[in-house]
Length: 548
Image (cartoon, rainbow, N blue to C red; front, side, top):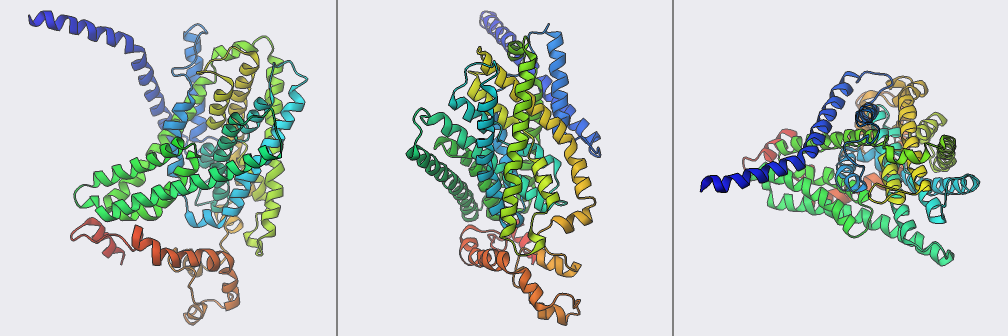
């Protein structure tokens, strides 16, 4: 009787194993490739040219070539590129960790410039790429493309690759450049996606002033609603953890709650058709300011490394994924008989990307400099060139938007759509490989040494060491008394008027009053540094006493 029951069960298990065997093999190969990317990236850590994103991209290309040859030219990838996989699973950890780890003081000090580059600059780039594509492509034998397709092309190629750029620049060595490029990358990606979705949803056959105003109103609503949702999610997690204090019984619960609340904010934004990138980014900023200080000391270490590890693995996965899918033979078959058209279209798009970025980086930098009185706070020409160059890379966001616009479930049978997909792949590979390889040397040439680099790009003034350290303190940095500094025997080079000049706009009108409001109203409710819960014998209490 037992054999009668077990026999069919084993047969059924055998059938399932056979049907899932391909998936198991694919997952094994991909995990092995991820491990190879980490090992090789470590070995190339000191390389002047290579970085981890380029390493993963090259390994993906090599693996795709091997698969293409072994399959007889029928297949080149293990997994099919899916924008759902990218937007729902891979992008959230990267953007959240970026907000969680960012130096908030430097970011918000340059917030106006970041919004100028990320929002206004993206609109300028979209307009230039759209009109340029319409003028150049109409005389080429590409295929039928309507106004919506051209606007979508503008949005696709206006999206910079913040993932690759963050691996090229260093937050400690180049604080101003990092905050500008990184902040612009986040706002740029959010703006590009919002514009792309708006292009797909709006009726472009009848464009008038009311449609334009509706479009602008929808964009502003999306921007502020997404930001507020991220802030609310971060504050809610801080309040819950502060009041309930899970750490008294289990640190696993508070770590799990932080991770789930971060992901919940992203999915909630998707549910309400907000910009999930902005939501999870500001959720990360708020969590690092409040929630992170409410958990136990061991949970702080765990969450910091867990978020960074998830972000790193997802970044590597994306570039490996893009590299393997770049050789998809199905799409390249459409341009096999006309390589000159593919080469012309790719070159035109790359040229429009260069011109479109230059058209807003330099003029908006000039406008930003007009609002800054101190020469040290202004963006120099060398810094502008670095910002322009570092933002030329295109990546997985452009790929995902292109697949969304020109394919159905990853496949296409239209020649025009296939050409746009292959050209997008070409621009992504070329910009990442060439511009990514040259960014490190360019930064070294324009900003030679870390000491000189910090003096050139830091928005903090050049001061003696003891005064610099005091100015960089987050707590009470705007309440320094120069008279006490002078009495302590400090150098006479900085007179009272000089320090007051340094602590004018940013420190006194924004940061200073925000700290007052934060300490008086926000931190007593939501926790944070200096307002952690006191539980007898808890690691948090011991860490607080240690800090005091």
